[in-house]
Every structure is written in C-alpha cells, then in structure tokens.
Amino acid sequence: MRAARPRGPRRPRDGTMAKRILVVDDEVHVQHLLRMYLERAGYAVDTCGDGDDALALARAKRPDLVILDLMLPGTAGLDVCRDLRAEGDVPIIMLTARTTEQDRLRGLRDGADDYVTKPFSPAEVVLRVEAVLRRASPDGAREGPLRAGAVELDPDKHRVTVNRRELSLTPTEFRLLQALVAEPGRTFTRQQLLDRIAGPDFAGFDRNVDVHVANLRKKLGLEPSPVRTVYGVGYRFQVADSA
Picture (cartoon, rainbow, N blue to C red):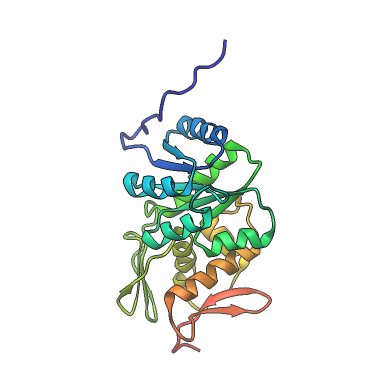
C-alpha cells in the first residue's frame, strides 16, 4: 500500500508554530517535491514560480527562510535576492543549475546564505534549511554582548552596531563577525571560519568565506577595516589601537 502524502506541516512538539519556508522555482515538480519533504520535516511551505510573485509572497507571508531558484521568469532570481536582502535579513538558499565557481560566488555576493546545485537531493535541501535556520536563530547563543573597537555585537538580540549605527547583516555574516569579534587578534583559517559559520559538515569551499568577508567589510564601513587578511592563512579581527 502506498504511503499517504502528508496533508500539512506537523506542529513542533514544544507547541510552537512551524517555521515558514517560501520555495520559489518555475518547475512545478520541484515545488511539489520540496513542499513534500519540508512538510514532512515539520515546516509550513508556500510556493510560487516567478520572481514577482516571490517578492509579493515574501512581503505578505514573512517567511523564516526562502529557497530561491536563480533562473526565474519575470524578476530574475538574483534580483529577487538583492531586493529581499535590501528589505531584511531573511535567510536565503539559492537553487542553481549553474555549477561554475563564479556563478556561486555571485549569488553569495548578492546576499545568499547558502546554495544548492541542481540536480539535488531533497533530503539534503532539508538538512541545509535546518542548518541555516539554526545559525540564523539566537537560541542557543547565550554569550553576553561582545565589543571590539567600534563594533558591538549582541548574540541574544542578533544585533550589531558600529559607532552606534545599527547594521543589517545576513545570518552568515553575523556568525562570521561573531567568531572574529569574540577573539580579536586571533588568526582563523578559512576552514575554521567555515566550521564556525556553517558547521563542519557544510559542503562549501574556501572562497565562500572570502565573499562573506568582502560583504562584511563593506557593511562595517570602517577604514582601515578591522577584518584583516593574513595572507596564506585566513583572517583576524584587529582592533585599531592594538598592536
């Protein structure tokens, strides 16, 4: 006997509302496949097939995460990503059939937190969603506020200010800055930073870190940037008046 298709998301055992995921892909079978797997995992899911509808749904539904195909009719996926990022810090996972490093880096530069290449395993997408939501959530991050030079970071409030100017960071940028500010002066390798921002099982590559660092430096707006390159090794956070 065939298993019955789930009718909707299961409510988490703690009684909280299910996290809402927006899936944007012009292939209807991809929408249905991801909806099925995500609802089985306990998420509420909205779907659409073009960029204009994606922006309208994101503004109306306020999803906790967006899974976004790059190749969309109407407003292109990268433009949707940029618009969503300009309006808030919702985590974004990009779906792409493009496999070159430059295509992936472009998506990260435009604000994506992660990417999945087609064809993909829907079970892997669910794991990526869980990982991105986990690092986007302040739950479990019970450190007190951190301060290094002009930068103040509050993990519980998920808030960063530079000279009292509040920044809008993606979840990945926040985790990256948190790792660096927590240990100013320490040099991290790119792999160590990948592990901090995404976990050791993340199937990323070193250039991911370079893109997120470039975005972070731009948003910090400090000259010289406190996020220093240690050539051949990685990065460190250097307070201006320290040696």
